[in-house]
Length: 360
Image 1 (tube, rainbow, N blue to C red):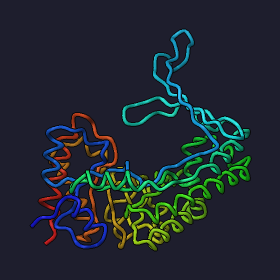
Image 2 (image 1 turned 90 degrees about the horizontal axis):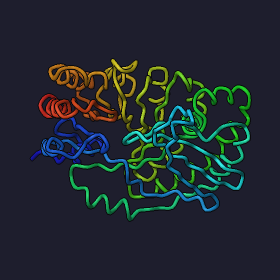
Image 3 (image 1 turned 90 degrees about the vertical axis):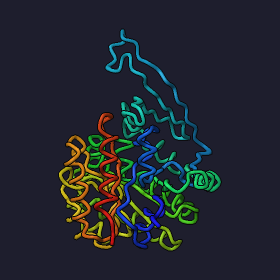
């Protein structure tokens, strides 16, 4: 008897031995349609990230959102576009961010950090953030989703990544790191203390698969900052999860070569969204050599989605070959695929997993 899609993914995650390589797709990348139904009938498992069993609360801070459209006469570069302004009011001052909605995501127009005067408000927000268990919502979703959906809990960026990408942006971070590193580290410590409050809630919660941080670009972070400011929190959280029988992963979809040995020594159980060459500096074979005991929850390389179906099939087979029969490979979709390509491509990748990815 063949496994259900969920059983197949969990067999990889827990080392039980799947019948063939699983294929997963983020819930946001799989529009409901006839092909979606066919894919699920043929073994695809939906990778759903929207039911983390906790919720953040800020008893002393409030958030207001305002949607607006700059008129043409203002000369605003976003004139005629829909923008969302978010104002976070903290005991130490207000923080303002502006985003431009873009389908399932958004473009950041204005980040919260403007000047050094914003450090007190950012620290106050971090210190005010608490996390409450929300098991009921997670368990209801688990009961409803069925045997072809896997639920995975998510805790956002670790402190350094949050500072770089959510609060400052790369350029401003570089300036602040050079000129006010002590203030950056003060904010870092407040965010780390915030995350530790979430660690305990997730470690003792009902979801067995938890992901923390990701999108680490070695060209921005560098090896030293990764080792000293990112990896220790991975290991701290991972150890807590392991104490409670849970698995720990990270969304590492950029070049990983410079950090490969450090990742290999970490508490990470699965490397989610790992994207092989030609899109990054490591192949599946490189990753398997570097991380023989870790699960590769790999992203099918985005650039190949523009190829013909023969090449799509061949690339999936190459990924399977390079894994070397470890039974620790999941092929997934974690990035956008052109609207006119996803249906054929997903059917082809799924077929390659069923046909070529079988374990005898």
